[in-house]
Length: 353
Image (tube, rainbow, N blue to C red):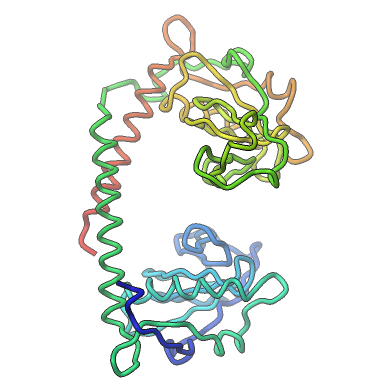
């Protein structure tokens, strides 16, 4: 057990012979390419995009990165070559394997509480930083333990993930259907597609109480809008019914997006609305949300997706022989795509690492 181990403090500069900050590269200077560009984002393992610059850059590989600013203190392991911005620092030890790197990355991220927008990580501070590590009997870092511990965690997570994939695959069946470009399509207004559209019912986020009842879904472009789980005990009237399309009505970078929400949830009034249709389900709902989100480019914080703008928004959908939205086709198309993706994920997860 990890709590049965002895732990000691070590300076980062004793663990990593190479501690090097990335190099400044203005966004306007980015050239489209295939090399990961790692910056201070807390998402996607720190990868902020892919570029093809060859000059004025600093390339790293098989090392950790830690954000100096932005999501300051967030650490990731990169088993691939990447270009680092000056908002991150690379930490490298040629003797470390990927399991040791992963173990230490979690401990590094715990340094986040010490830093903020006003107190960033610089070269002096990072060289003075210390982390606690499990040790051997002679008080040296127990890298073998770190390796085995991380391996066991990885195997456990992979096993759970593979079980999840197999369950999903067992509930899906592939059927031959026409390709998207072989179907007839028709524009429909939002008001024609949905029998009922209603505002979400939450008032203020500071009145949300942490719990396990329903998710709080925000006006966000990330994670299908999901933010956190909350209790409904104090605000039962705030809950919106699931199996709906969520319209993100305002928000920089999110206005105009649509998400399919399968379960009951809480959203904030004035920021999101719910659309309900008789034949909507978890498969065609994903398809419709994607088609609706094409309209995102029209809306912004100053031009909200509300009122008549929402109701009159047109969405292109495949239709059946009666000229009606082909919900069955959209459902099967999504099932076929999910089957393909789940099989790809399963194949990837069973590869030897």
